[in-house]
Length: 118
Length: 107
Image 1: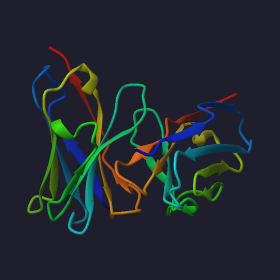
Image 2: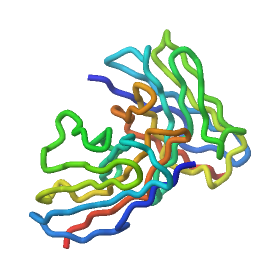
Image 3: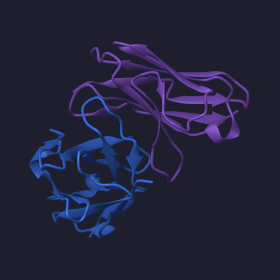
């Protein structure tokens, strides 16, 4: 059974960089896309971007200037960095997997709440 | 970006009711639409993809329909465990976008 697990700090100071890692177990990330999605408290879902196992990426234009997603296939992990964070970046951050164009997110991590506050 | 508008945003229903949630896309997306169920404190769970294909393990009381710009999720007989928030998502264009959600509560 494929499982995804987010990890990283739950509190980040304004103007600093948010860094999270998603570890995939029960299956290889090869041939799959890993995405990050976030959900501010009480609000809807926002797709942040994806990385293919080969390293190609695609980011939401609304966040593109601040986002980097990377992959480490040897560790079966992919990571998110979001720079210059503000309170508006406070959210539950999810990682999820899909098989590519036209495919849904079939496996999700449990989510990690990241609060931006001094 | 493709905008997805769900209606209603809030729905109050009883166990056993037939419930339909609609999702309208701002431009045609063929059948590239998925539906997810989210319960409080949990990650979304995939219910339906390709507009009408039931994900493995999802009860058959859930069904999806539509293509182009108009889609629907129907629950034929609402069960206690179905009270949750439902989201549609388009899979045709990047950035991937979601509807604003429909919260289904107990009447």
